[in-house]
Image (cartoon, rainbow, N blue to C red; front, side, top):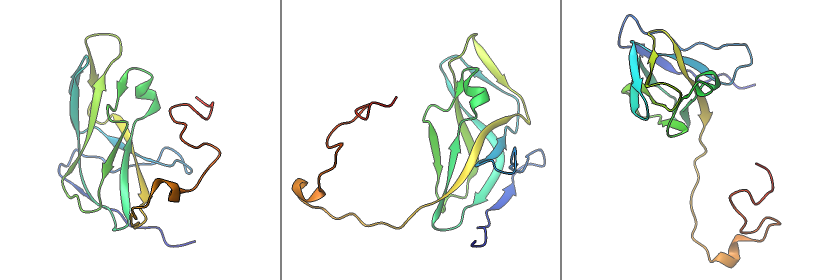
Length: 149
């Protein structure tokens, strides 16, 4: 197995917590909220983590929702956030409250999202005619056309 890539992490606050894994086989690293924040109903708020990262070239960071918060109604409105390898600003997690009640209070130190580090292949796009794309069993079917929801 290849050596694991190193993601450098700098804290912007002494209160910031380093990412942690919930279990040995967890795909993502938990990110923590830096400060108490209220998310009002149907509004989006950028939650601070107090962390900056240097993701290695050829990789990206994917900020994903935690299912436990989603089940309560606190969601990532954009589903997955991307952190590019050349970004060096503070990591924020964009959250929206759609649950019951007027607001949700996120507490300092609360786990708010997961960070997954994923390889990004260097690809090239080549323009061709539609007929040169090749045929598949699925064809043009989209949005549920495979019969699996």
